[in-house]
Every structure is written in C-alpha cells, then in structure tokens.
Image (cartoon, rainbow, N blue to C red; front, side, top):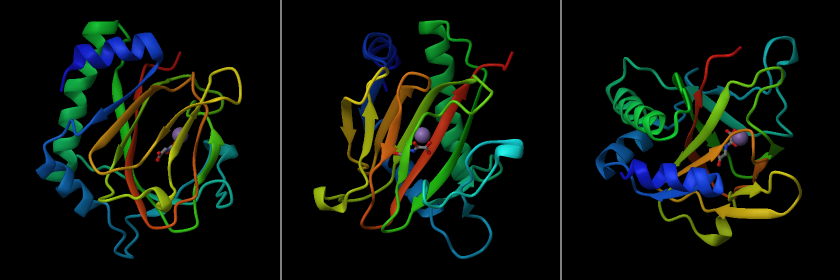
Length: 197
Ligand code: OGA
Ligand code: MN
C-alpha cells in the first residue's frame, strides 16, 4: 500500500478508493469472520449515542459486530490499520489517535439512508474507512455507496462494494448513503479518531 498516494488523494479530493490493499488471504479470513451465525455476535445497528440511541431499521438495515483484538484475524486487520494510521499521521499531521471498526452485514432489501459519520455532539471521527468483502458483486446487486458533495446533493462518487476494495473519506465532509442491496452485503466500517475536546 502506498500511504503517500493515499495521503495525497485525501488532501486533494477528500476521498480515495484503493483496490486490494490487503493480502487476499487476510481479506478471505475477514470474509469468514463476517458471518452472522445466529449467536449474539452480530446485533442490529443503532444510530446515535447515549439518550439519542435508537434502533432505526428503516434508516439503517445492517447488523454489526465490533472487531475483537483477541481474535487473530481481527488483530491482523487492526494492525494493518495501525500502520495506515501512523503513515497518515506522518504525512498529514492529522493527530489520529485511534481506530474503531465493526463488521456490517446488510440483508437483501436493506441499506443505510443518507447520513454523515460525525456522531451528534462529537467531532472526533476524522476519517471513515469501509473495506468491502463481497465476491463478484454485480451491478444489479445494488448496495453501492454514494458519496455526496460536501455542500449539496450532487453525487461525487458511487462505489461498488466489491471484495478487497477499501474506501477512505473525510468523515465530516461527505454525506453518504448505502443504496438498497439485493443480496447480503458485507463490509468493515471503521473510523480514525482524534481525541474529543
Ligand atoms: C457506515 C456506512 C458505508 C458502507 O457504516 O456508517 O456509511 O458502504 N457504511 O457500508
Ligand atoms: Mn456512514
């Protein structure tokens, strides 16, 4: 992975799509971890924090599971993201101090309505990342991620959630949505954070 190129794109356009930055064997192991076996590991996603926390299946249809550093596969992904964090900090002086991420599975017929990733009342998410785990995703499968212009309704990018693709964007700048998927759609959504002030 060329961190300098990622940093340059983030500075110039605010988002970057990276094709297959991870070792395919790690991506395959992540795919195997991103399966809802009916145990309580995956839970319906919630929107907001604290008192504002609600389950809003109409707006957001995924089930999620936070990565667990004691699992070898999850640990390998977190280590890789740690290298990216350090590299981006050296290149861009962002002061990113940690990374949080969860697996997400959208069932057929679900998506995530337009939103931004900066949680209400906090401004500590700086960079959003989404790593996609779907083999042979076809155009008719839906589920694209749409990034909107910072100041309006124009669509500036449509990203197919294809296996091995990593999307990184400035959390505060880009409203985005997940279009309705027509088959199970798997990913790891993550956020590099700065210390809340
Ligand atoms: C999110 C999100 C996008 C995607 O989890 O906040 O916007 O493509 N995910 O899965
Ligand atoms: Mn989001």
